[in-house]
Length: 77
Image (cartoon, helix red, strand yellow):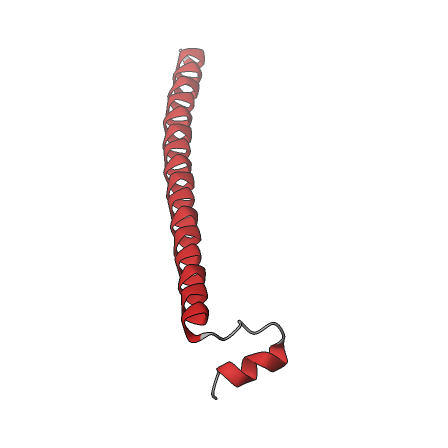
């Protein structure tokens, strides 16, 4: 009877471990999906910012700063 009890505990632990691994896999998948969406959103926002900068510099007729020294002319501290 002792052998049956050990075998039963082992099967129960394997089932619990399988369930836990499944939950971990689901959480990891959702996190990866969320990270991909966030990366795409950041890329889109960055692209829009660059477009706005280009439009602003074209409409004012000034060139974008090319060196850190030039930036001082555009940004007031």
